[in-house]
Image 1 (tube, helix red, strand yellow):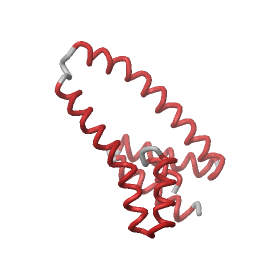
Image 2 (cartoon, one colour):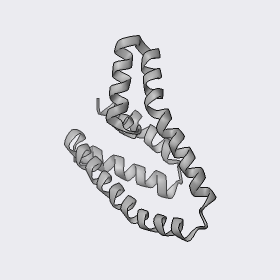
Image 3 (tube, one colour):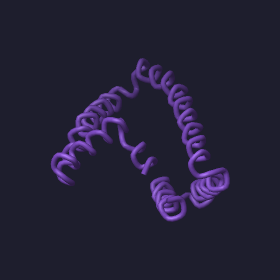
Length: 130
């Protein structure tokens, strides 16, 4: 559940919206609250992506994207180490190494789509780690 919750944009805002919406109006309230939290950011991203696509050949846009790539790589690396540390604390070294090894094999050797690997990991966690 933690991995699923952290996959949502703005995890704290979406978790709070979903919880409060559920408490106030049940499953429908939770759905509406989540959509109200996610849709504005989604629309803004679509608009900005449209602008980026329109001006993708601009030297300024190319320079900006060149500056942003290393920052994204560092942030992704930091998140990876955080998730790994959290996994070791909650599931132990053996389970963490099994999940990392199997995931790496599925992604790199069998070319399985990452969404299926995440779904399989969630199922594995629900069955063997709960």
